[in-house]
Image 1 (cartoon, rainbow, N blue to C red):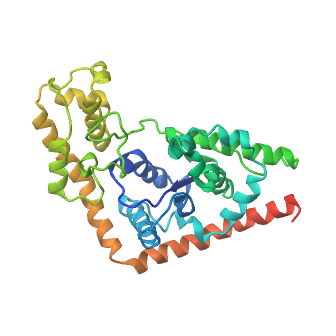
Image 2: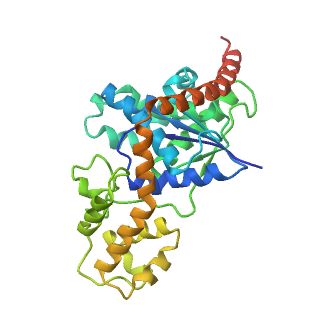
Image 3: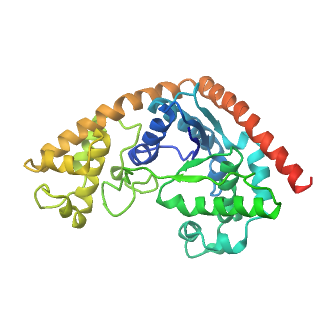
Length: 333
């Protein structure tokens, strides 16, 4: 039996290699499985939990959709839409806020990390964000949700909310309790400047990441300057524990080539770093180059991207409105 999969991506703009290898590449595989029903949501309501430039946000929504399509997700076979255009998301989030408990939200570690020391100045939206995430998933009766390490706790909360709603109103399995979809070979891509920090668009130095819109020469330059160490190329897997930057570059190579880390180590064990970096740059360019060209081409056709979002919104609204109407009945509206 196929899976019903819901995936949400924030329209942050300037998506990078970490986003592609850690999430989008997996989305493409899931969407290609004929048994799966996939819904890809650009979560623009989540984006405004921190202040956004309205003009940039609109462009970032289009860029996220362009990246999905350029990477190989077919908009004709999969639903692709932006969250703010389906009002059921906001409505369900409020109703589920009245089911969720403060104690549950207080345990969310991601809020503590994002709010920092002065959490009193953080927005209410940033605090209650996981409830909106639960609404996103539960409206579509999703059976599975692809999650990284940073979202596992949020999915647990979603499961708790679904179970409590069902129990409170005495309706078995009305809100489907979703399962996490953990990638077997999950690629957590780190900064090219610091192998202990996640690759991020918020890092000041552009040399810390490979952007999906970088051209060939820029990628070559960034990999050339990527931090390594003074030791020779590793020959065994257990050497990588104390060599985070080398480990990261080998993970990038193995993920791009769809081989195991052991195979990547074996391939380069007798070579020097300059040879490895040349091959790594070439592999990234071979994979990312066509995606980059397609993203740029799609961004020149805003009408096409808006049409994809509009069509996706109609399909998503059809599903979500049925669910929210039933929720109204159950609650007593």
